[in-house]
Image (cartoon, rainbow, N blue to C red; front, side):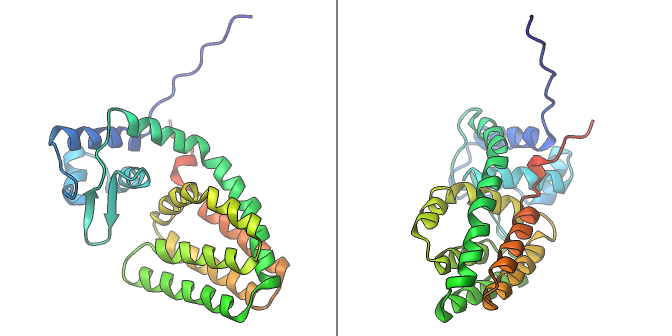
Length: 232
């Protein structure tokens, strides 16, 4: 039986923007530490919406090419090489579902164990992470540091060295999805509320509620643009 012709895959708009931004960086011979033009200006130059541009900037941030900070613009921290950025972007999209599955398998159990095993000091560390994330969001940031602190505190409170080691092995992949998720509009506040529900269940030492709250939280933050279908 002859092999069927595969349908043509149309590149997503943000992939095209990523490619153009990489060309811009190379053609201008931008140096590390240089900033791209402000988003409004850059979107106008490219003829795209700021939302599409923002998605492309996040994709480059995930790859460690740009650092995007509130009030500081997009700063070049690593020069792109050839078409590696596009290939890395597509590989990232391909492995996202597996990362999400791994997170749910590991972190739901960690939340259940944390509710059973946490100490008062570990509960205080969880609360501190919530305070850090809330402060970051209030200041206009995405809350990435507070988010990382929270999940680390839950992991430590679970007292499971093997699960902690497995979390450590996928930490880099989780950070990619974290940056991407928290870059979406209103996601930081929704994520913080999810953290608060998890924390309350851990405080009440209710493992079933903690696991359920963590599962709901991961489903929320796993809704990222890369996994949505392309229109048309």
